[in-house]
Image (cartoon, rainbow, N blue to C red; front, side, top):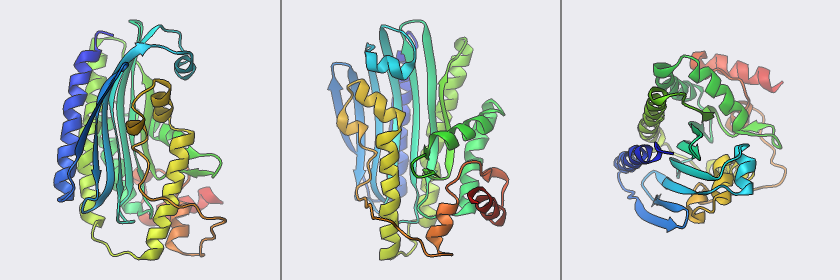
Length: 312
């Protein structure tokens, strides 16, 4: 676990950069620092509430070590005595329903001195899907992936489609992005490449969101759009509490509970038997919540047809 200290320092600096970029982009909101320390390690949770555009944002950094519990073994599917984990996780909920929710995570794990790997990803959850915006988002991520390996984007995009999926709803959480886990470096150079790759994703993340805020943050909306936003946030809560690996690992490793659950949106609604109006923007959005849409090479009309084909 000799690489943990080096990676910790890189991620710590990236954590600070994310907060700085988001504060500048919002223009009003300021992150409050909430350092924490427990027997397993320490971290810093930075929280913004009530910004000009950002309703609630959390940017977590953590560095934890300890003995591997039986619950953790079931998550790792490996035998080990000790673990080390460090990383950044962030989620942003905007007050305007036309500004998407976004999530980013990069992390490094080590078990004893015999196994180490990276994981992470970025995904976008719009309340109203704009196909052109979705294509831009995916192409930004693809450009970073292609710097390192042309297979990263198609492989990790499919992984995201499968991972960010609510089987009980038969819906994806949003328009996806990329997701990867258990990517083990074979030698030191590979480790440096993985560290650079995950660092580039963490650098890209706040700048993409700054563009989404600038584009959509001042769009007018009404009570119906706000109600729809709260309903879609309910789906987000369902995924995070039922399927999210980061939440499960945080609880299993006895991490800081406030930091683990910072991803929860500030206002959520569940309604019974919601019926969407045919042809409405809400119905169009739900039609896009399917696996297999290749956003990077589809135009708006093509994307809508593809979504309809996948839905039928």
